[in-house]
Length: 185
Image (cartoon, rainbow, N blue to C red; front, side, top):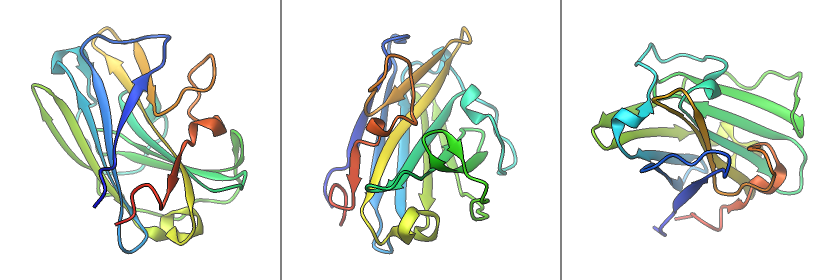
């Protein structure tokens, strides 16, 4: 299996000391994705939402949250996934840049697994191919990102790429990872 560990960088607007974010992304044999977000650094410096009943929820990005945005190469629409260390999640469809789709994304019960310790948080989630554009059978453009809430309440925005002056995970140039070539077994 190729090494698919990706380091996210903080947006220049706020860089917290001692924190790091990595994402292990693996394309599964069935066309789905396996993700492991590792939020590393002093646990006391990071606000992590308390564990809750695993269920869908909105506005997860207002606190510590991991995100995945996926699109078919060359198509304007995309799907956004949000995963909270609380074990809550969200799925949104967009027809174009920040234009929410009127169609409802497929129902999904995410299995978000979270481990916490003195040196940070690990969040793991699997995404079935039926939840991906093209059902996991076509090349995908992927944006990996995270929002970290710090002990003082400030937010930092982490991504593979920050193409705009302000943090913007929806900016199409943020979709800088192409699958399946990068992480196919």
